[in-house]
Image 1 (cartoon, helix red, strand yellow):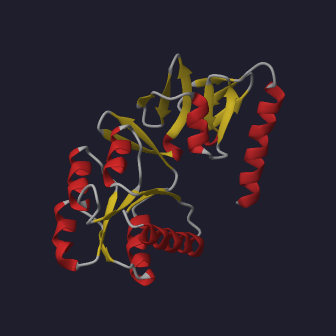
Image 2 (cartoon, helix red, strand yellow):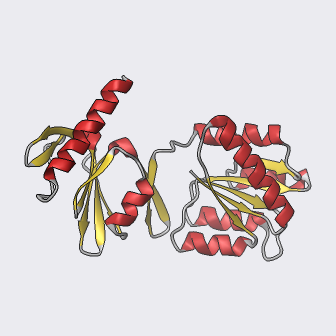
Amino acid sequence: MRIAVCDDNEIHRDIMEHLLNRYSSERSISFELVPYEYGMNFLYDMEEGAYFDAAFLDIYMEDAMGNEIAHKLRAMGYQGEIVFLTASPDFAIESYDVNAGGYLLKPPNYEKLKMVMDRITRNIDPCTYHIRQRTTVTKVVYHEILYIESSNSKCILHTESGGAYTVYKTLNTIEEELDDRRFLRCHQSFLVNMDHIKQVEKQFLLSNGDIVPIRQRGVKLVRQAYMDYVSSKATVL
C-alpha cells in the first residue's frame, strides 16, 4: 500500500509520518510513505505514472491548494482515497466534491487518523497490482493473475478471467513490485502464479489450460521451489 503525504510544513509531514507508522505497527499493515513538500510535484509524479492508494493533501500549500490538486486528480481518473489536512473545518464541503475520505484537522489527532485509515484499508486489498494505462489505473488482485510474460520491451499480464493487460515495464521490475512468494520466476521471460498450477512436467500446466515454460537450466530448482511452496501452504492449512 502506497501513501502520499503532501504538506509544505516539514513538522506536519513528520507528525503524519509518525502517526501513520504507529497505525501501520498496530494494525500490522505495511505502507510505503512518500512525502511531498509541493503539491504540484505530487501531481507531476501522478501524471508520469506513479500511483498511490491514498493521498493526504494539505489544503493550504505554498504552490497550490489541496482541493485544486484533488480536482485535477479526479479529472485524471484517479480512484484512490483522498484525505484533506486543514487547520480549519471550513473546507469540509470540498471533501464531498471530490469524493474524499474526509478531512483531518491539524495537528492530526491519532484517534481521528485511525478512524480514517480503518475506513480506507477496509476498501483496499493490499495484494493488488496497479496497471497504468494513459490516465486510468486498472487494479488487478494477485489471485486473478495467472502469469506474466515478457515480450520485447513490454510485458503481458494474463488474468483468470481471460483478460490480458500490456504493461510497459521489464519483467524484473514487475517481479519486484509484486514482491509475493506465490509468483515464481520459472523462465527468463515468464513469471507464474503458483496458485494456478495444475500439473508439472517439462512445463507448467495452468488452471485455464495455458502452458508456461520452465527454463531448462535449473529445471530441478524451479520444480523444487514449486513443491516447497505447495508444502508450505499445506502446513499452514
